[in-house]
Length: 288
Ligand SMILES: Cc1cc2nc3c(=O)[nH]c(=O)nc-3n(C[C@H](O)[C@H](O)[C@H](O)COP(=O)(O)OP(=O)(O)OC[C@H]3O[C@@H](n4cnc5c(N)ncnc54)[C@H](O)[C@@H]3O)c2cc1C
Image (tube, rainbow, N blue to C red; front, side, top):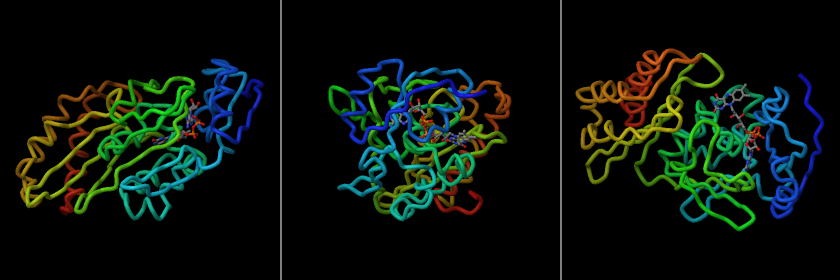
């Protein structure tokens, strides 16, 4: 199906983009890579008279270290995240995640900000960004506000962003010494059926694990029971505790039957990938 006609606006300033949104209201939408938006317009799932293209706004394509955070601008694509030296140095697990998003065309055009704003429940980034403690900067007519990633996604295709706000930065705390991260996902369609983010850190000799599960519920799930079961367990002893903790967690997940698989299949995948992600984050053979 062909796109219905629309007017394209190409502001070069954030303020102008916000004014255009105020002028055209619900007849308008922000537009970044267009990988989701244009498909939805073509399928007539969405209809806007005005698209406000963000691609000419200065500084929106930055990746920078500011104080103790990595700051990712709203035009940064998955491909940039996969290849950028700062991301590869500080967050190699995130670079790897980005390298596995969709296909090369999606990675080259699609932005992380667009991915988060669209809030497709099977998206990869949210679980790892929750684990990393990312915060999102939203800019609207009344100024700027910050929302923790863990509070941003409210459900499928629904976020804490007001319709007129622009996601202007994704801020990720720099990992502290000895923190190791991993993200593992699996699926047979374009998006994964399940994704698991895990972190390992040994604080004063006391091992600590963190786990978030994505793609399986309406929003990323903090696997606190797994973290509690693994607290203090040294990596070489994980095999005594991890399989049971992963199975118990998976059994409680709000999985449902859909095109990605049956609920039972997804819970099985979750148990397997919780195990693999935790082992890999702790550098234990068998996690790969
Ligand atoms: C074939 C295919 C395979 C894919 N596979 C995967 C996958 O494996 N894993 C995965 O995680 N994702 C996957 N995706 C999703 C992909 O990551 C997103 O399509 C992409 O990142 C969206 O970014 P965009 O810049 O194209 O957004 P757009 O399509 O431009 O916008 C998406 C939505 O976000 C809004 N928006 C965009 N930027 C902003 C902003 N800065 N502030 C406010 N609102 C904004 C738009 O108004 C629109 O509603 C896939 C997509 C396709 C088409």
